[in-house]
Length: 195
Image (cartoon, rainbow, N blue to C red; front, side, top):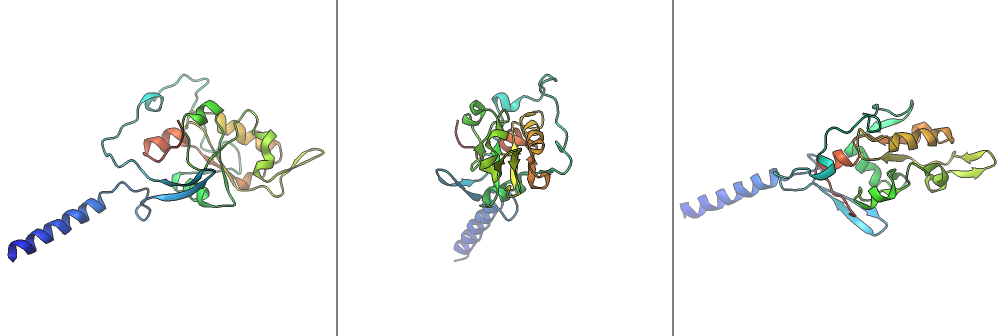
């Protein structure tokens, strides 16, 4: 009887230790589900604690220019956010998360729920973000909260898109910049779709 009780206690302790060692997004967030054009996708982290980045994502030094470290905020009034805030925006039906990289990068893998509006023509697509065309360009009174990202802190695609959006009349207080981009998203082992 004593041996059975000890076995049960050890099994429960092992189960508790395994549950505590799960690689979660945050202490109270083991995963997050977001809606995408193809249905719900669960965002979680890779559970292999030996996982390492490879390929382009493992590169630490790219020539500057053109791959120069970007400022913390690409423009006055724009809020820089991290992964938890980005996940919150992905779950908010009123917000839009924009992968501002060129289509080839987007097709190689992106954050679930993000739409692709490349930095080269994001201003032409502001209607998707709640703006309306007018005689002078865009009326962005109804602009949605939008988060933009690109490849990482060395990538200038989303900062360029953000500055162009502001110049077109998009309100800075509705623009959020996920500076870490795909490199940090992948570094944290978060779910990537496509590619």
